[in-house]
Image (cartoon, rainbow, N blue to C red; front, side):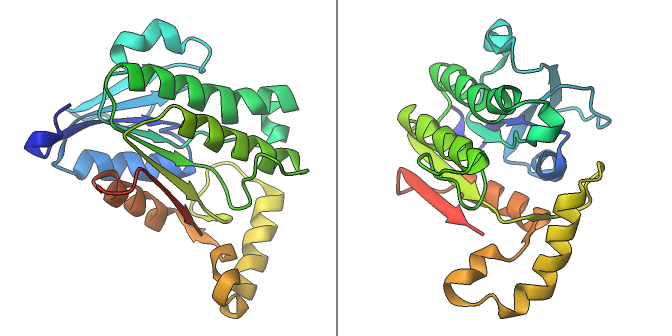
Length: 216
């Protein structure tokens, strides 16, 4: 779309979440983006001249299709089965909505899909969470964007507004064990949300390989 002039429109799904909220601020500060479209289930607190909020629970994406025109799609959608309420609800948020969003944005001319999943994502995994993340990756790849970048972070290290006991304990343990996670185990160290968001913007402007998967 606009990348010939080294400017672009960004769209971010999950803009009020842990990763999305950090990424949103960085996108608004980045002069290469002339407009930022933020999708969220609830109104965001941030207001900015180039920011447009779209309130959606994911079920009504088609009704917003004309507004979902961008160059770079940043998908930070993600939840837990406990918060979603059921495996079916979890699958809708972590698989169905990211794929439907990709279909609409691709049809509207988007050139790069940047997707956050999780370490261990595998469509053939016996673990439900990992399997859904892997199926999402596979489905997004099948959309055939000119560029697709997948991020598989380990447990996220950031200022989460909601309290998740399992994640909190995992993060504490991960930080304790991080110095001993070397070589192929380095990717399991806790992932800084700030670093992840910065990497997403950096990768958004890359060229070259059609698909890149970054772990850790």
